Length: 458
Image (cartoon, rainbow, N blue to C red; front, side, top):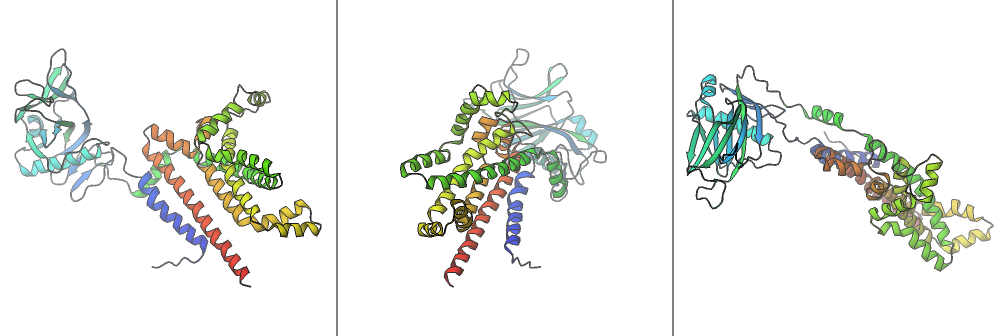
């Protein structure tokens, strides 16, 4: 089916949907660390990434965990080399990954109970497939097992390779079992000066289970993952941002037009000073603007104290988000309006005055209509600037969920708290809004240019 998009509005909608699919879905609904996927072929991995089963095997794996690092510290005053805490269950299957070698230990009782033969290529292939998939699902950015690494399977309590001894299920503390790696002579195997040096990556642990009793939950569909993700996201930053930006743009629109109109009527020297004052927030870092606003409107300032006395505190309130957005976006509106007014033919304005038009009538009936294209573009740019304001808002308004936390602030704090998926979601939302703003300006400019060409051709 071919869908022809003829209207500009439909084109904008199609472009936004395309950008949403391209950016938003992979960013926000990407597989989180620790979640599994339905494996290809006969391998199945649970959605939580803690269980796996290869069809046809006599066992499944569940309760998977991964130790990113071990320790060389002595245990009860005695050194046992580099060791990992395996837990309180000595029947668990262990994996120790080193550079170029992976050693898997299946305790004898576990092997006998679940029919696992560490000498059988079919059983070891199933073990390797399940362990490798679970290891990848739980890596969390850690080192992965290399595709060319050698795998060794054993049911013995110790395994030696090139002077390195891998020992499993050692009860170094009462009730706690450890897997250790040390030199055959008891030396520190992690010392690069040791001839038997081994670069140990990480360790993994899992319990064998009856496939009929193991729970391997399938991965939810994309729609289910999207709905589940959106159910965990607090959408208040979106409403705070839109409410703040809309309130700010109304104020900026009026103040920008009045400032541009007033500055053109001032003497040249006064105009230059006023222009510098009105434009300086555009060149100052947003944090500087926020700091200056805090010095001006803070609780210890005369202005801030007066507002507190009348029961209307400014700092760390929603009003302060609007003030910050107005200050940083005002120059864009002012410069666009002033540039548009300056491009008008002064003789035309003088002719209107000779006809008895008042300044107000000239402004609303002549200047605004003729400058509307540039004013609209400046309005949209100012709105986009208010939408993405971060530094000044954080200084003046702080980070209060549902009150002053806007989308840019949410991105920063979600990322700082390790919620990368939520931060990517809000980043994608800002990207979509920014794309829409730029596309609107382009379409508006093309339309205005077409009107001018049509008018000039008559």
